[in-house]
Image (cartoon, rainbow, N blue to C red):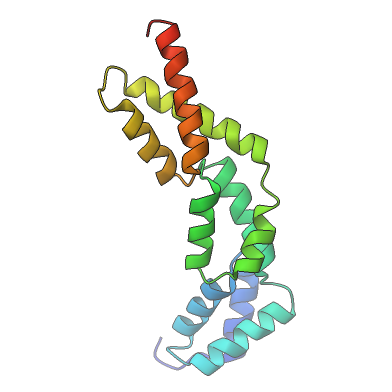
Length: 161
């Protein structure tokens, strides 16, 4: 960049960016820090300004993240919680955002994903273990995944598959 960028231009640029999609505080801080060439105090001022003007809101970001990752990516609660906490979102905000997730839809999505995966593993001696690893890796609780897998494998057995 050469000449050190001033705080107001970084704030303006980031406010335009934040008006197009949701960002969490830590993402915006990283962007501000990079734009201000490592000036932590300036980056903090930019973030505070954007939070004050409601361009950045961790709760709003978390709700959007939960919706997208559960509906589009098929992630479960554990993986979503982990990824949000890795982004520096507080536990209270994460818990509140996860309440927005429809448990019935999540369970149906897990069941659908497991059924699809089980088709690709037909005849595999370790199908149960692989399905469990797949479900837990996507963030679904072990107990729920285990019950769903038992049901799927029993249906397949009853149907002679």
